[in-house]
Image (cartoon, rainbow, N blue to C red; front, side, top):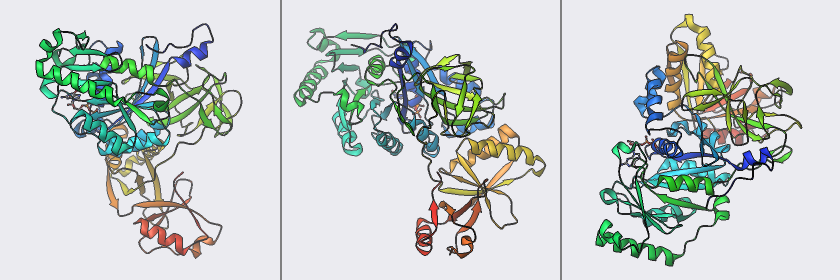
Length: 535
Ligand code: GDP
C-alpha cells in the first residue's frame, strides 16, 4: 500500500511537501546509475523510450570539446536535476557526477538530498566510490535504498552481497525481493513484501516496459515455468529468509540504520516498477533543515532555500551561469523579493529554470525538495541562503580540502580577458580554487583542486567555452592552509623549506605544503598561529 500524500484541501503547502521525494543516486562508475535513471523515467511515464535521455545528452556532447572529454573518459561531468511525476508524487532526482575526481560536487548534492539510492553491480559488490559516498550519507543519517543491478550477468551470491553490505558499510541490509536465477537464467524476482513471484520477459534493448507475469509461489504452473530445480531452490531460499525473519523497519531506515535491498536488472527492466513504488513509499518527504535560527520546517509559510551548486555555461550557446537552489521551506514564486543573507540586502529573484536532462523550462513556482536553477549574475555563492520573512542562514555546506596543485599557463596572452573571466567563473563553481604565488614575478594562477582530473576539465572548458589555449604544470604540494596572524607576525613564522607562500583573491595568506608531515611540523614550530582549512 502506497503512503498517501496529505489531502489536497488541507493546505496547499502541506500537500505539496507531502508528495515530494528528493533523492540522489550514489554508485561507483559503471554500476548502472545512468541506466537506472533512464528506466525510472520510463516507468514513471516521463519518457516514452528508454535511451531518450542518453540520446539527447549525446547530441549535446557533439557540440563542445568539453563534452567530448566527458565522452572520452566515459564520465558525466555536468549535474542536472531531473523532476518527474509518478502516481501523484513529484520526484526530484539530483544527479551526482560519477567519477571519483568529481566528488566535491557530488558531496554537496548529498548535503541537500532527503534520501539516496545506492546502486551496486551484483558481480562487484561494494566498490571504492560507493563506499566513499555512502560514508557522506552516513554522516547525515540519510536514508538509503539499495538496488543490486546486473542480475542478468553472473554475479555474487545474493546472501553474500547482503553480508558484504552489512560488514563493509555497517548498515543492516533487509532484502525486499529475491532473485530467481542468476546470470543467463535470471527470470525475475520473488517480492517478499507482497509474497508474489514476478517473472519478466526481456524486450528489445529494454527500451519498453518488460511484460511481467505475477504468480503465487504455490502456483502449480511455476515449477514448469522455472524448471524443477530452480523452483525448489526458490522455495527453499524464501523459507530460509522467512525463518531468518529479517523484517524491515521504516523507522530504522529513516534513521539510516537499515537499507532495504532490491535485486534487478536496469537494462532489462527487471524489478523496476516495484523499486520505483518502494522509493516513493519508503523515502521521506522533505524534512526540516538546520539554520542559525534552529530547525526550519518545510511547511513554514516563509520561503527559504539554499544554493548548493553553481555551474557556468550550462548551455554553451548562452554563456550563462546557473546557481542551483534547493527550496527548503514555503513556496517559491517567480519574481519574489528575497533577503540574501550573506550580502545582507534584498534581491529580486532572477529568472528560475527547471531542468530535464539538458532541456530547461521557466519555473513559475516551486516547493520544498524542488531544485531550481537561477540565472546567476555573480550574485550567489555556494551555501548562500535566500529567504522571505525572518532572516535565517542555513548551516554551511562543507568544503573539501584541495590535495592537488598546478600552475595554469595561458598560451594566448592576447586573450587574457577571456582567460581571467573563464577562470573566475570556473572558480565560482567551487570545483577549483585560484591562488597566486606571493613575492614572485610569475603572476600566473595556481589551481588547487580536490581531484586531479579537474585540471584537465579546466583546460578543456577554457578552450571550449572561452576560446583560450592553456596548459598545466603540476606542483609538488599536497595540502594548503589559510594562515591567520596579526600585523607583523608573518615575518616571525618559521616555514618549512619546501613550502610556498601564496594568496587567494582576497589577498589572504595561504601556505602550500608538500606533505601533512610538513604541515604538522610547521604548526608545532609556530604554536601561536592559526592554520585554517578552506572553509
Ligand atoms: P553509470 O556509469 O553508473 O552511469 O553506468 P551506466 O548506466 O552507464 O552503465 C554502465 C554499463 O553497464 C553500460 O554498458 C550499461 O549498458 C550496462 N548496464 C547497466 N545496467 C545493466 C544491467 O542490468 N545488466 C547488464 N548486463 N548491463 C547493464
